[in-house]
Each structure stands twice: as structure tokens, then as C-alpha cells.
Image 1: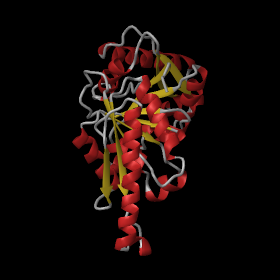
Image 2: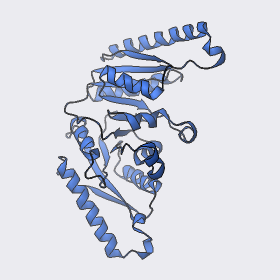
Image 3: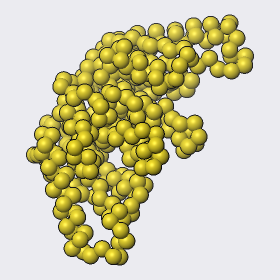
Image 4: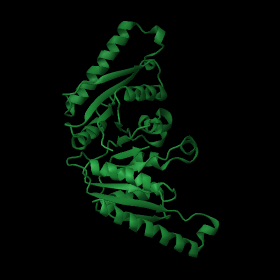
Amino acid sequence: MNFKNLVWAIDYSSKKSNINKAVSSFLKVFTDIKTAKIHPVSILALGKMGFIQDISKQEVLDYKEETITETYDIMKGVGFGHLTPELITTTGRSTADMIKALNKHVSKVSGDIIVLGSHNFDALNRFLLGSFAESVLFSSKIPTLVINPKMTPQKSKISKILFPVDLSTEDYMEEVKECWKFAKAYGIKEIDYFYYFGLGRGTSRQPQFIRDNLHSKTQILEKLVQDSKKKGFGGRYHLQLEEKNMTDSLLDAVTKSKSQMIVMKGKTSKATAMFVGSMTRNVVRYSKVPVLVFH
């Protein structure tokens, strides 16, 4: 999992925020400019200007030129003035229209990862304005790297990551192997594994059942750490009993382990996103370290 074509979705409307500064500081240590190419892009939803049929061609041209200028000024201000941004336009006005245009561009440039910042909206603003970053996560077929504007600027290469492992699936080792590929490609030294042990309901809450199941999961995690060491990675596991929220537990593990990035498998589905939420989305919302989600 060595990324060669990074599509950087720039938020030109957030000139005064830390979003683009946070993303750029991470790109500088994450990307090997000798082997990878960054494709900076801004998305212009013409539908937000009003009724398309009422907008003159000159207005559209002026708007496009202004957007490109603002985007380039942002890039120049964060140390990427040597790159030329590309403008994607859509006649729509919704987040869905913008994401459709972005995904089309990703295919055009053979992008293998999308990098973008999150506005870190509160619940009310997410409801009213939506979340572009979360929607990209939901629709993307390639890995997505989301960076919170509250992230401390990255000054050194990533050396330690946290990987939440789902032992309830039979193919969890396939997900772990994807993590190893990424870690090897980017010179990661340590991988910590996080597992949330749910106590379940009914019979599964019986003390003996819990003890047996906990012992079984612990053995799997211990073997996982040993296998990881054979691959050349240091690290340990964090097993959290169902005492508090899963997302809070994971973010606590990030802090305690001093991990610099979360790498996780996306588990989002329309049903969970609508009715019970998604751990992936919640982690992206509240994590103060970059979150890489692969699909």
C-alpha cells in the first residue's frame, strides 16, 4: 500500500482556518516527492451561485478564476506553491454532486488515496451543513486520509500507528495484512492493536462465558503482536472491556500509546450511518491524529 497519486481535496473556503495548514504539514512528512505525485484540487459547485440559466458565461469564468486564485494562495501559504491546483466544476449544488465530481477526477488521474481535512463540525452544524469529509469516506472506493484541524502540525515522519482490529470477522487477518503493507511501505516502526471487548447480552454476559471468550481473544491478540514482531514491527495490544463508549476507548488508547496515526478498515454502511452511527465516522470526527481508512 504505497501511494503514488495523492488527490488533495483543498477547502478554498477555509482560508483562515487550520484545516489546510494541518493537511499540508502532514503531507510534507507523509509524501516522498521523489516517488509520489500530489494532485491538488478544488471543487466548485456552480449550483450554489443560483439558477444556472441565470448566470452569464462571464460570471462563471470570473468565479472560476477567483476560486483558482484563492486555492493557489492557500497552497502557497502552506508551502505548496510549486504545485498547480486543478478546478473541478459541477452544475449541482449538493454535497453528493461535489463528491461525484471528485470521484470522477480521482479516476481520471488514477488516484490511489484521497487526502482532505475535516471541519470538525458539532452535531448541529453536521445536521444543517452536512460533512463533506464523512461523505467522501462513505462513497470512496480507495483509501481516504482525513485530518482534523485541531491536529498538532506534524514535524517528523510517522513511526507509530494504532490499528483497531475486529476479531468478530473471519477475515480480520486480511485487514491486518493490509495494515502491514502500509506500515512497511512508509517505514512505520510500531503498530499497536486495539480491540473493544463487548460484553453482549443474555447468555453471553454469564461470567464463565465472558472469562472463556476474554481468554480466547487475549490469546489471539498476543499472537497478533508476535506475528507483527516477526514482520519487523514493535508494539503491543490494548484490550478494552465494554465499560465506556467504543470511540472514546479507542481515542484514549491513541493518547496512552502516543500513536501518531489511526489506520482502520472502513465499516460504514447506509443502515449504520442512518440509524446507529458508525465507529469509523465517529473516530474521524473526534480524532486529533490523522485517520487513514481503507476499504
